[in-house]
Image 1 (cartoon, helix red, strand yellow):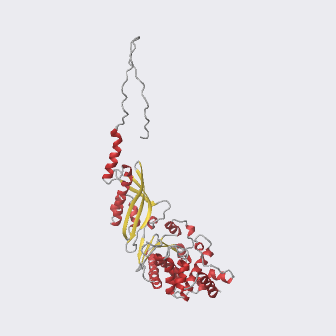
Image 2 (cartoon, helix red, strand yellow):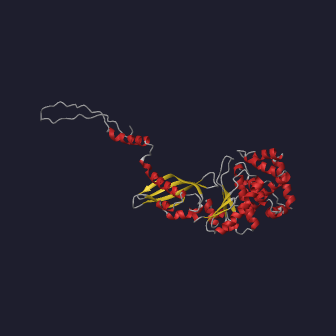
Image 3 (tube, helix red, strand yellow):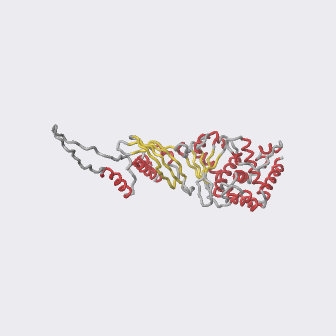
Length: 424
């Protein structure tokens, strides 16, 4: 057994003897080395008892304490019970999220550490918006708890975990506006202003369905934070990454069997300076991303996904290529027209603004070329065919051949000529 050293021998003991009278040594039998049995067995017996009862070792007591409190908190949220929520601590937290139409809300404690009368817990919060989310949104949270005078635990704070983005209610009380095809959630905005976003979204959804088809949810959730800083906090990124960007869409790409919970997040600072047509184009563009998400995969290049969303956004507006693509027109007239389709790196928000604009404009013109030359149905089929590939290599080339009967080299040449025809 580790930690025990074997005894190799025992010296003979000598009994006292009177002087001058030799006494032979007394040899006593050496008892075998014995360890106390009961102390060694107690931990084993305790562990066996816990496992047999379906429990966890006592070291997980902090996690269990936190889970019990958060289970009660989740039940209070779903029951819209402010008093029950307050009983778990942090009464003000309920006022920020009480307006959310929720179908599910639950916590799973992933870590917990107790220090005296305080407890810090890490947890996964999963929730679904009723009527909109078919899959839950799962986010990492950090909670602080304190022991009450009665000896129970209560939440003192709940925040995003390190490196995790805000949830909208972290930024203040949520105001809700409903449209026929939309749900608008805002912080720091009046219901009347949010109603304007609902009107735009309600026009965007049928426009997207008219171009793409109806094989998608047919509705959209739009988040409107107070400012650019609020938008960046929702995305867990610095504000500088989204300055000048009117809106973005979050969600996971995947096959048709997946049901991601997409959100369109508006930058009110940039969105507010757009005119009515520009605001409609932006929201229709982002709604297109929601509709096409299930058919957008790792093989889909950004020139196609962003170009298609712009094509749907501008479809029917009457805007000309010169109006939509001023940066690219400038490059063409100066003899600096691009020779290749935009690369994914050209779409970086934090890069050169002119390069970003030319990338979006180039993608839009590529999709406009396909729609005009091969037809809108072929454009949709091409998009879906590219997204079906699990690997990027060869996806565009194969889809160009199967859906448009051309090659990447030929299509790129056609696109370059198209830029000159439409922008020179």
